[in-house]
Image (cartoon, rainbow over all chains, first blue to last red; front, top):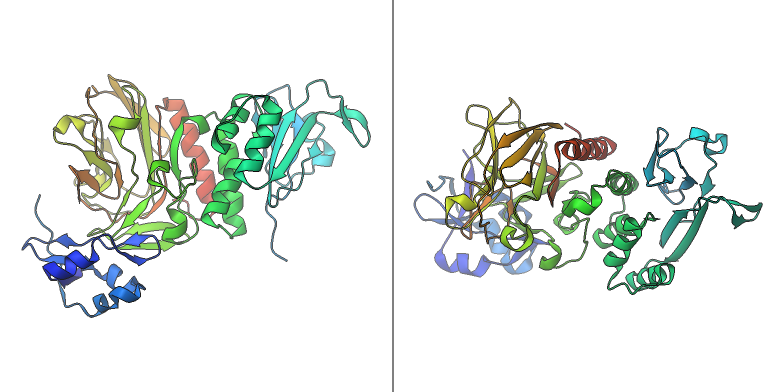
Length: 67
Length: 369
């Protein structure tokens, strides 16, 4: 099962449009339960000192939103 | 000592138009792109070594009268020019050669190609912008550009993404116009990507790349093409590329080896003929040279299908590794990308030629599938 880092609405707003490494940007997405999350790749690869807190996000199982 | 992969190249006038193995022709100018014994006159041609290309933009043109002044007499069959490696110096040099005003370095390069000249400007400009330092990657880029020009494909390309350099900062650049701007169709990587010498891998949950290429702004009916080189073999419903704006008739997307091992490219339409295949580790291409038919191909084997193109195209930018569904990314892919292009329409023969050049590029980088 794929895990992702769950975000609050406020945390999501902080991350949108921000770089987590050079030329790669956070992309918060909603899951099937409308939880905002980022991927573990974004958490692990983040080198932006303003957002190092993403490394401590709680992990949940990824449940994609149905189209 | 570090390798100098293409510090010099040999050139010759080749009125026969058939390029000897290991060389390419641009009109009647033959360029040596492989390490041959050029002093032995391969192809029956007399070869002349070009100027040092390091930190320089070089231009070459064949001299059909074979009497260009050289240190050994008026016997030269190629003339060379060289500028420092700045856009302004290159543009100025081409203005002198052409006797015409050139609006930009890119326009100057296009003038040279149209008029049978060779230049290293395009490859070097990309390598400089992306700060590519690996000698093999430099050689692969140089050979790719020369090959596309030799096949008259370069002018069909609007964006080329070679995915080299192993980072977002290098993979983002468009080889056709390596400026760090949205207008130059530089990629904008969103979400979880992993970069390596093999390309760029999206995570299938949050990752996509915005090309900033808007079909309704940049394409006309009956002339468009796109391709992607996937190194991942799996079955999934994620889109390799995609955009749609409202009406389903604006759909422009590709699902590769989806459920039932079917590949479907929707090319400005809501109908598609699926291709069968049992792997997604392929080069997939979709092209239109008419509004009533679509060419689809996998690994250079192409077929033309009846397919009516919508009168209106998507007004949303094309995303790679997801579909831009009315402004929101969805149907994320996990396929590692090692090449992609967006261009004007290609014939079946041109699709095959493009695949061959792409595969040579991947083989040079030891990442072919």
